[in-house]
Length: 296
Image (cartoon, rainbow, N blue to C red; front, side, top):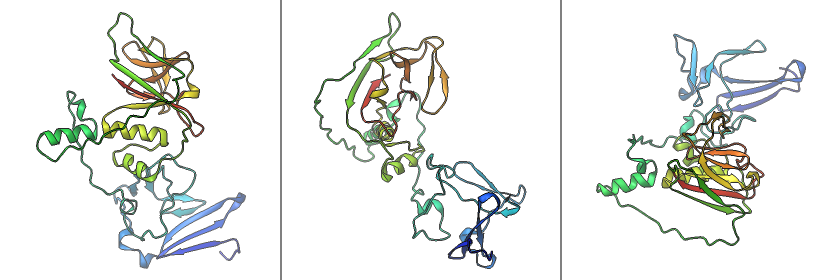
């Protein structure tokens, strides 16, 4: 500890020591001054298992050893706290965050949660607007329906869509798409990420997040394709035996003819009304998109 390479940060009753170890690595140590532990930070240890509380993501906190040094704490990234997929470094809290305050309180995550059980015959209540309409009909509050100004198209759509169900019953009563050029993708603003987290959704990027927001707010499921990744026109049809879809959740799903898909010349690109595919998904390089809105 006498080395000039040792760096020490001091906080209110908290000490973070960072010093080099073998192999050019660094060891980070978080310590609490035993006689000055803030009441809110007192350990909550299960005396039966010896394990600590879990983070929001389910990561189990327990005493471990790093380079033979006992560790009684954990430095968490946003992913370990269940807030995003960011895992490149330790999550930084605001500089004025009060020591000992509950984590949810500091980040404004302690707002009330209302859980509503929706029966299969009330799909109209799967969004906030549908619930508001139902409450207003029962005399609870006034339904607000702001006017939506139409946006005129400025160029012909570079692709078309057709419904192909043959002699089988149609699984799609209506399908519409809109092409938007010159978009810029990236992380969503904080207010949008907060709204999604409040209802248990994980923020992904601005293009995906805004469709999820409208889905939950207006009860209007939307999906957005990267136009550059769509091959040919879109076809809404039943899946074919043996087809599969690499979905946005990273899993590959086996499909059959009881399922409805949105496909292009390459194959199935989206499981209709459920989840989009990785192959045509939006990323940081997306500039032109196809917005899909349909009835299933």
